[in-house]
Length: 422
Ligand code: EPU
Image 1 (cartoon, rainbow, N blue to C red):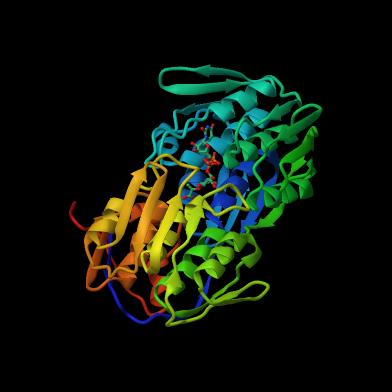
Image 2 (tube, protein in one colour):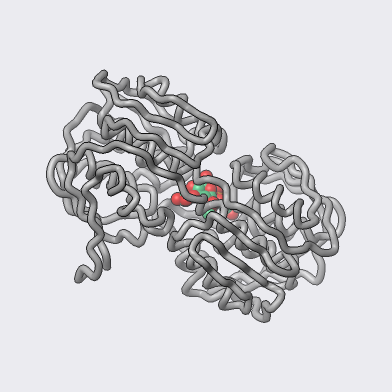
């Protein structure tokens, strides 16, 4: 077990570059299953979830070569259709392999992706949308089995918006016979980016990035090359860190236009910033920040993945803020940890919390409950008095590459201690 040890209160400043998005590259890796020949993916973040996804592909027979930020994948050699149970259990996003495996290999077996600290997270939409395309789905005690001799295009209205279920259906439909129309599709920037890449490989997808996606299936797709889109969650996380630490920080290699909902909140709070085409500078101010009401929503609404770091910022705002988490049932439970650091954060029900600020935070020994709550505790550690120790940092490293090293570049006092006895 490794941990982060943080000394709070160090002045932060400087420049930090954003990595490729974990939530983009995972789908690009999955899409390689649809493609004949080699797929080259660049700007690949060295994050644990990315390693797990690559391991799943290797374990079913694909050739995966990694050279730092470049992945070369050839899935022509896939021989297995059973995904390894242990890896599937560790990576919820393995569900985006269902559509590509079905479309190219006619079968996929996978364990239940399992519970998750964020709440129930069932895969009923994956099952329903694959059935609409003609797949048979068996739900056994220990696993799902999806089979299809061929997939046929069809129309499907998602009863509610799901990012990965949209991506999964869009990928499956590229090799289905005829036209598929996905309605009430998710619009997150990773989706049009994935569609654009698939189109360069011979797919016919229009409308990705809107709520209606139309896919005309083709018989075959060929390999290609794609650069991962900049991580909008990392961009927002660094911006929130700068605001919370009252630091002047320039965030580079990013797409500020993918994070507009956060800038709107910064406007309401009085956090000063300047936006460029691929950078954003957060400015230092001594003025108090104003409390706000924030509601998480599908894109372009306020990202649920930024809710935990943003809530840490709200502990520093003047007055009473309201946080309304609408996407997940279990994404506010880290608040008990934040409260032990001195925050006033009252959980009203699983979806709503009240935060009263500004409060001085103090360092604590804590465990990272999940990826985004984990990085929120890191930010809390930087603005707290004293030492904060965070255990279970695998959860943080699932999505942020070399985060300690990169934050040290801003002046942060954070150390990664390896092999701590649990
Ligand atoms: N849902 C179902 N049934 C399904 C699929 C989803 O009930 O078959 C529910 C989920 O339980 C959730 C809601 O639908 O309550 C919406 O979740 P969605 O399916 O959109 O989430 P996801 O596709 O599983 C992706 C990101 C998440 C991010 C959400 C929302 C990836 C790999 N994951 O998950 O990222 O929070 O969209 O934007 O793209 C993270 O990076 O920390 C993370 C959790």
